[in-house]
Image (tube, rainbow, N blue to C red; front, side):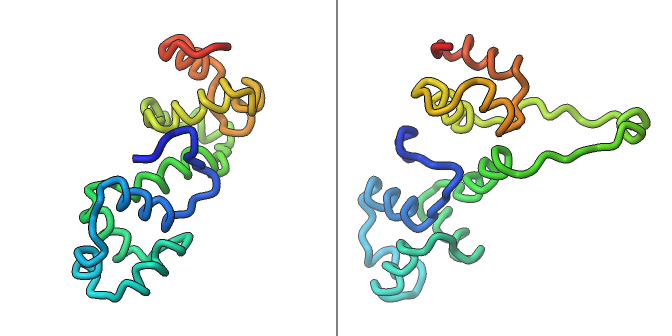
Amino acid sequence: MRNRNTFNFKNLHLGSLIEQAVIEMEIEAIRICDAFNCKEEELQKMYESESLELEFLLIWSKLLNYDFFRIYSQHLVLYAPQIIIPEKLRKKRHLKSLKNIYTKGIIDFILEILDTGEKKQEEIIQEYGIPKSTLHRWMDKYKHSK
């Protein structure tokens, strides 16, 4: 939906993302106002809002045929603090593999940060908790520079 060069997973502004999707899909304001049963002024307030109520977000997701909840999920994958499991618990139970928790959007975001020189490999590994082998696999698979 949004060009990856301008998307910022860290500082989400849902209203502007929605407004951009509306512009790209060329949906008329009257149709949107009908879906929300609101006036254009209220629609404009939604565009200016950083976050939206769950009910509104669900309507937007249906109207624009885009999962806006996924944006929050990707944000959590990148920025939520890592869970520290005591050694005793790790030995007692096997944790499910976290394979495939990274979406293509997240992979592109990380590789773009690396390619533009915004962050080094070590910084990405430390800040986002991405294993070094995973980062190298992405770089090889998607032909990004090291």
